[in-house]
Amino acid sequence: MLKTIKSVNLTTQIIIATILGVLFGLLFQEQMTSFDLIGSIFLRLIQMSIVILVMGQIIEAVGQLNPKQLGKLGVKTFIVFIGTSILAALFGVLMGLIFKPGSGVDSTLIVDGTIPEASTSTFKDTLLGFFPNNIIQSMAEGSIIQVIVFAVLFGLAISYVRLEDPANQILQVTVNFNAIVIKLISIIMKVAPIGIFFILASTVADLGVTILLPLLKYLLIYALGTFIFLVGWLIVSSIYCRISMVKLIKKMSPMSIMAVTTTSSAITLPVTLRDSIEKLGISERIAKLVVPLGMTLNSNGAAMHMAITIITISQIFGYAYSFSEYIYIAVLATLASLANAVVPGAGLVSLSIVVPQMGLPAESILLFAGVEWFVGMLRTVLNVDSDALSALMIAKSENELDNQKYNT
Image (cartoon, rainbow, N blue to C red; front, top):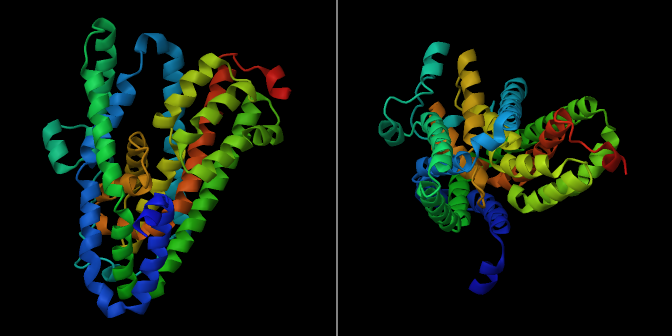
């Protein structure tokens, strides 16, 4: 029996745990309400390594760049990545504000106690808050956005040092350390079905089926946002590159299908790279730089997912942010998407990065575990397709788009 359970992949285990958690919560209400402790322990296990995960992943990604070789092309690529990810996050915020997926949920049944009022910081204070006084203090306080800024600068410094001193091993040490952190999170995620089962069972026991309706609304709104944003991407790309949008959709369909079925940008990468060169007509120089780099630094789907989820949770708890704070949410989601871990259940890990930063209760994150697999499909297809479309537009700007190959 145990061998049979182990042979089932983690995603399937989480789906089963979600269904069982809801059923047990409805059938055994009084008995299940006291089991929220197990889910809370699981959430803390994820959170304990978040700061070093974020810092390590970004330092590795930026440190591996060669600033002299990238030059103009690197700057252009970085602008496209950051620009589109911020737009995706802003669009996620907008979708949340328009359709209000978190409205109508009684927050007191989810988390005990009162939630502090949202801050009323000015735009100047918000911008200043991006930069740390003391990185050790920022790490201790869990100020993720300050950790990200430091990690980007530190990674950039490593990239220059590698040119001056090829024998310097600090990047390799970081890579090895990151592998251990990823393995740690992977080990923790093996017990995710247990943690998710108990947190959902106890939550549904308290709340009933009313908690499931907002999650369905949230999922539909996120799906609509992904569809609209991706269509916009396709329209802009086809107009800029002067190519057929219908043909573009057909040529990108294999990578899109692979992204949906695997929910993994890493697994889809070989297909994306091959089709970008052979079907879209992107030069090897552009494709081999932009597509792999985009897997880490260009996560439109992850940025939108985190932004719309923050808005949903804030609506559940009655937060009303200022305009500058909504911009901060978009920037935070964009920067956090740079550290998007390639591990099972990455959505829960990503939310553990951003949700506490906005003063929202971490316990609310596990409510979204029930739809994580469906969210992962949407998040991955937007991540993968935006990488290919970014490469397409950059190739066009560099006159390295083979129209004859594209039209074949």
